[in-house]
Image 1 (cartoon, one colour):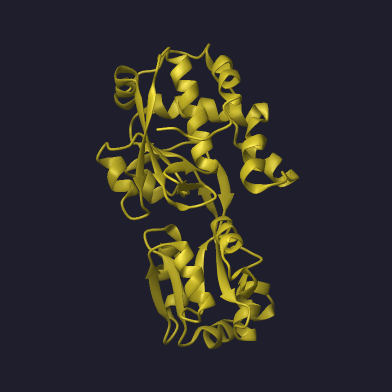
Image 2 (tube, rainbow, N blue to C red):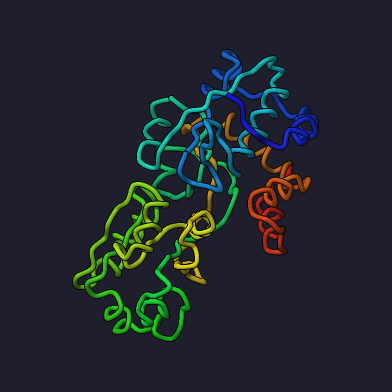
Length: 299
């Protein structure tokens, strides 16, 4: 597998981590002994992870590539290969639990429920559930979901706006859990429609088949930008949840988790993260700098 990443950063990161202690753990031992790391890549979560012309790409993919390079050097592994394993929102955790992948590189929210069965790195990104509606949607629906006006604080207005509506969400995500378990799904006549991918969700909104589509805001922005119906779609100004993204890995392998967190912390402290961030998201603002400076762990 070849991963397109900012390769110039790998030697500097590996050199900075070379003095770290030798690590051992079931997954780490397998990576070292077999000289192979298996990266689970979602194909439907740009700009974090996607597959274009058979090649994985995205923000999370680049981070995984940098980490793999650091592990290769610090563990003194020559000619280590990376195996690309395509996963979906529905089967990613099953493949992780079954040992088919070592690290899940995508748009994965670290939750307490998930931590009961897997481990997570320090956060790599912060976003939240948002919504997409058609530009010609009813004014009340737009005021609640897009503008966040006074009506968004009124239970009666929310019930009126959503009564009888079809709202979509990507199956197998925390957005689906939030939507199904929240008050919107309990409004009379509301139908929650799981969809197979985000692009289909936005297309359904543009076609009038869905009244709204919910998903993580960073992904929705990227999907809207790529859509030929972008001008017909509006995205919420605010987010309705907090979604800290992290890299998932097998539970109870602290060696692998330490290696990944050490690499990420150096990437954050050194400022290398901003090169990766700007490649996929554009200009780095002060809130981004603050986030990564807080997330980096000290040695």
